[in-house]
Length: 301
Ligand SMILES: [Fe+2]
Ligand SMILES: [Fe+2]
Image 1 (cartoon, rainbow, N blue to C red):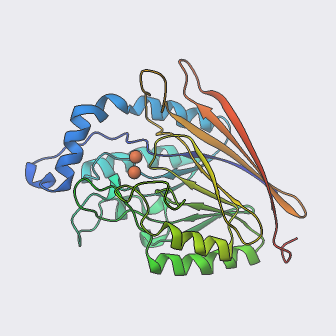
Image 2 (image 1 turned 90 degrees about the vertical axis):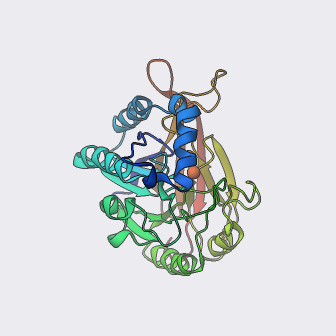
């Protein structure tokens, strides 16, 4: 079993075009998202930018994690377009996906359109949390994408997922795996407003403080973010990249970027390096490099 894995973390590409057959299809909160796309997002996010990043990353790795908001309004046509892209891209690559709030815009009780379409890139039956193991690395996918009222973009993991997560994190630790957790909303409590944050971030952090994890990757905020949360024996890094389809503001802020992450197993620790790569005029380039070393739990060493 290899002791090293490099994978790419891309998030929030928002790369699909919201096309709909009738206004009845979007006669709910989706109408606001479509309007927002027509007024500003259409110019801000471009599929070509996302594809350029993805192919830049593909020069370095064949393993990808996507932390949600592939679409603008979660319409069936958008989820199908994203699925078509995923199917082609994943022909010769390994891809893990979790949904974002934009992918899950729907009425309470409705099934999200991505559930059947994106299942091959998630867990069986689109159930969360899911685990996919690549060598010594366990990718653990959570869904924080829940239906919300208009003008809200908040998320929630929920007690059932948190309970299952605690068990999965302990099982993965006992198997000597490096645990990389994916969640769309930022899990650091109180960083985001209640309108757009993770409502049970503190409860999720309690699970991680107890059971541990080696890295948490999230999206939603469309900018480079680096924080830590408490783990059982040391701080757990929490990283997020900008929207992967963003052309950036006039001053270059929020320009698309992604992380290239390498996990190395040593006898006593996990060495993690996260290279932030930024979209440039002609190609992407290294922006900065974060390095972490986390001790393995005594039973794994
Ligand atoms: Fe987003
Ligand atoms: Fe989001």
